[in-house]
Image (cartoon, rainbow over the protein chains, first blue to last red):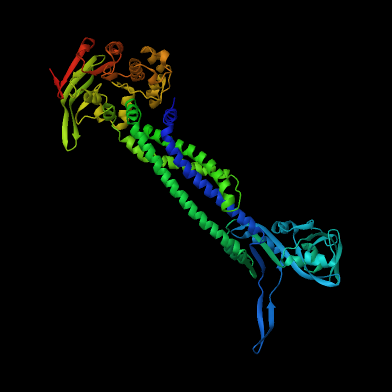
Length: 391
Length: 222
């Protein structure tokens, strides 16, 4: 038999009375788990929603525009500066401080080409990266592959496909100056309401060849991989490593929605922490009552050789057990509560967050042990001669 | 230098308690010597200070003044940690109300001192239970035992560490006469290897003791 066996037997004997302490820990743990699970799911849902908006940051050459004015009449503007980014410079973006938050860096090259008897805007992309940004596009057909200028595929927007009668498998010829390429239509992008409805999208290398812009891109679309990345700060960092380029943070609507979620989450977490505080006091109160009930037993233990350290250890162990049991049950209840309530509260169905189980149980163990502090002081103040005489 | 046959020397022990704003002196400069292997009874009326004296000898309580020497070593000067070790290895206690832990079996109750001392149970528990005739009841909890059996378990717990001194406070007080006699006989059988000091107010048990110390109003009576 060991000390912990003594505690477990004692808990087993008084399980009804200790039930109140465990229950209070369960309530606190369930509240914390429900808040974390629900709001994590809500934030993740918003994040996924934000993916439909595309990139968080757009990087493009800084263009200085000089307005042209004749008298009091504006006659347009004059743009100055290099309008392209060197493709070889792109890897420098991974040297920024928040580089681990860079999920996708997709280069694009824009230009005008002749398609049949008319002009069309062409957009050269890295298909592997672009598909991560535009995963919500619905393609009649399939996404383009990387390809080469000699053998390339294109996707066309619905505003182009319709008038020209293009569909998956159609052949087109794109030309610009003396250069032309033949391409196979891999797919037609269903109407999005965005600019892409009027684009011909082709692999970056093919577009560079067609536009005679080898090694150049027009912009970089950057997706930051996090729920609340410091997008503004990342934009400044990008501008720091690319002198002459400007990085514009996007998705401000999503960010403001995130801010609302975070504010609500903070309020809910504050309530949870108050619950945890109440739980600590309840556990302390229950354990203090328990120590008062066990004065005689503690006196006996002291008389037969228990040291102060052993008496205190037993109480802390009891507190830890209350914390473990309450934490695990609370986690289960909080997870179930979250899965039932979240669809109504934040329109998401959360998954169990097993990764927070150790944290929650750890907090509950600490709660139980902190709550044992006052009872432990009481136990140390017991005079065995007095309690054994008075019973 | 004292006679080295004296295991216990109580020297000028005074004990005062504070009751509200009043201070009550329970023991008034007690002097007492107990030899190794004696069976000594401390008798006296209720409130005479006999339990207080026993608790002080076992260092469950500290004297206000005076000293307790065990084998010429003053234990009243020992630290709290040293006193824990003293209670573990040198003294065993038996109480009137048995004071067993209700959630533990007889075996586990007897094993408690070993658990707290961090000692291995190399058959000591079974041996102690056998000595009090309860080996067959070792898996029973206190509620399943009679009063006499509970007191025998308490005696087994008191002797499991093979202490030099056994302090028994009215061990027959909660038992009928027959069972009480059985308990006294059991304690008597321990005398020799253990020095037994028993507090009682029952003069009918006088025949069992080597010596009786009478306490009256906190003083040793002639």
